[in-house]
Length: 505
Image 1: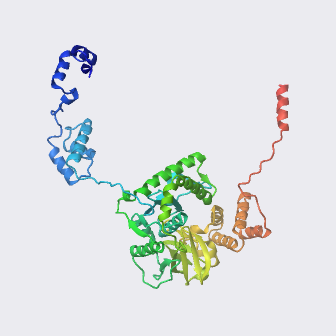
Image 2: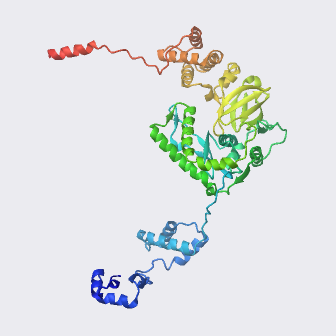
Image 3: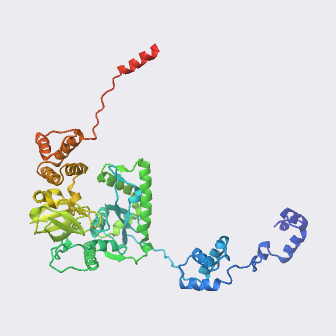
């Protein structure tokens, strides 16, 4: 203090900007001005809510989730004209004070100590917000995301649904890339994967098992129980202890949830740096993501090395990432797999086939031979019927085509549909027979050849007939694809003529 520096009281007070009397008072009390301040215990204005607070507090006790604005609007409706909109903030402050002093207990989050090699967390995350396109088309997909909680080392696998096949493929990819197995694996409740496991059994005798397990004649099981058995089998194969978080408590899977956010932010920045979001094919996109993960994991090498030293070794082999379903081919030459419909060759009608359901495709096996490999349908209630499987009988029953449930699948592309519309408009029911003959020709010869023939006939305005299409295909005639545009070179002499006319003028 100035007065302790051999200053007089009046000089010290002047330097401090105080009156001499005030300085003398502080010296006598030997206390700082801040220590003499007393909190205000009175209100500057009347509490507008004191008369109604009793009923409001009872409401808050009964329903703590009520928001202050909701209660305030209820007050305005109950007491018209008594409470103005400008009083909302004062009411919100009063509710906030009540919650902090008398409200229910709030959930406490406890920071965890992570040990090397102890725990890996995984979850699915949707990536549609990234706006990625493949060859110009939107690529809607998910990622199975695996994270080691100690080092934050992470791995992802692109998938299209939260199915058990995606979980099994993603987990195995992560473990084999890591080169070892942690002690525990934690997930959410996996309710989506359980729902996706429910199957439509065409004749009631379908059964499922993993590709590495023998078939069983056991009766159908509850989807939850079946999923638990299959998931536990996956964990047992790798010696993992399974853990699940509580329902609605995503924070318990906090490491992988936080990595979702950081991964998407890093991917967004990488795409911005790249300049565009279009990729030539899926392999190109996967390579881009793989390079990004290598960069993200590069800064975790030291802590990852500590984890690797305590990881358990991998088993001798990995489980095949597919699910077997024994289904019967119905009279429509269709099989029902995972609540979707696929067609197979009509020769298999009435036979039992084995459908091997992979992450992104479906294999159909009969007598230990692969007879079909089809893209897996995404979602539920979808269908894929290929005309080659049923056209031999459809040309014999043309009347069944018009009201066929899966008729739209029998137009390989828009040109076939244009040909069908043209034929039916000009020939009526006879046009259906003509179109089916053209479709039969595409099955016997080449679909691309028939497509070229239809394009040529439509572009030239010629009549579309099965005979004209067959003649075009038999000749082996080829036309340039519509993407190839020929531009004749410009005659530059015309510019000379323009210049000469300008000089004359």
